[in-house]
Image (cartoon, rainbow, N blue to C red; front, side, top):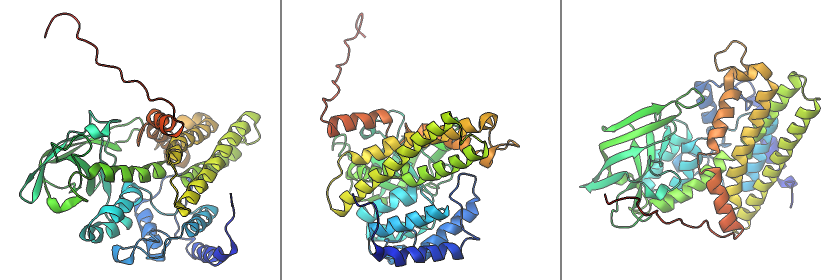
Length: 399
């Protein structure tokens, strides 16, 4: 494997360094810690305007319009990481929906939604999971019935991240009732201020309400908000989930956690402690391995060859690794590690405690680790599928 980038990219590298030097007074740090939302949004706009974010998105959709170049993307990412500067926002709209809209949306939808999403002016939530449809997402029951040029939607979604503050939702709705489990699902964009939508926050173990229940009662959505074709939702959702797994398991976030964790170990005098040093070396080795695994996936992309289940490994290992790094930092903080946000002596505004518990949740969210392992073992390693257990016969008398 070639682990270095040739000299032809040095002018780009120098351009990135010059930008970072010129913007050092307004740049948002990549280090763990609370960030001012307004400053983060302003920095996002700066990055989009300068072409470091949304680089290959066409100009007519609000991007920079550069030709696709995966090695250039690595150079940019490396220089921002070296400077300890945030390379913009990663969320459901920017990291997951935009690539999906570029692939499947109509021209009107691209013009309407991509630019504001990239600039963080429009916040999205994802309406996938339902109370009875978690790991078996295709069994979802929220329904949309066509009435003229509108779909009338009734049902419920759950574990909907950021629904309480989102402007829009991209959701899976069953509209083709006779088309079967997978074929009856349609991908629809909904405004969250549409009458009939009710959001109920769910408090998590982080103490915050980042998840929500969302109820739909006779919600009317224009037919023009369907992405792709009616009944094509499962295909589109599967495409988006690839980007979700990449976002949740991205190595850049892990490297940020690791660098901040090293600072804590150094400040607490534990960097020379044999036990903590051993734990640090283990997570550091895993982080490097994950980074090179990402380069292998990049090679597959450049050579236009399928990666198979290798992409699943990114999410499976990445979320567990983030949790393990945060756990190491929490342990190194000793009694300060159990403080919550707002406490007088809490480190980094309580971000470590929040990330520690949130990373644990992501081992389940976005495809549970158990499901990921099953897919890797069955599809990647050719192991036999888990046998289906028939429904047990009813006990006792008749009902």
